[in-house]
Image (cartoon, rainbow, N blue to C red; front, side, top):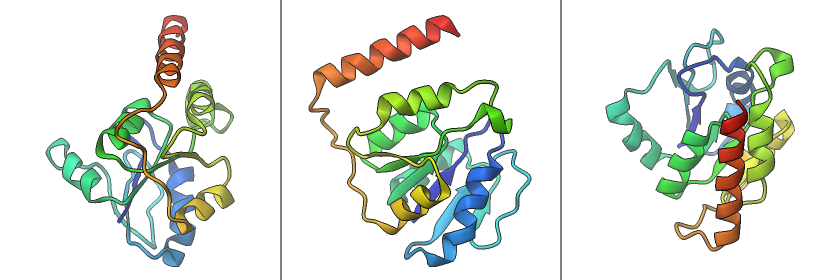
Length: 158
């Protein structure tokens, strides 16, 4: 199963609509957690919010995660060893108050198991591929330290 999750704080109809347009082409069923969105998917199962008690089980059952660029979801994908496709929210489209998700993906792109989709075509193509999972053991201490430093500095400026 492919899990699409937009988090619980803000709607992200662009992401949900994008996956919904080609969900019928995918070889795996799709479950979308649409949160506060107003778009109603037509080609995939959906739920407003996944209960916290069920979230780990749903995540565990997924073969790939599609998500906004929320660091909590990235860390959960890493914990469960799931590949994750990140679609950053864009401030210019009113999806967030600033473009911090673009900054986040700039630091994550190229890491094992993390894929960044900047266009609908990127997203579709990733979902049609077999994606590598992240390793449970981070082979790059320097990379991990760099990410931690970046996140600390970013948090201090917000």
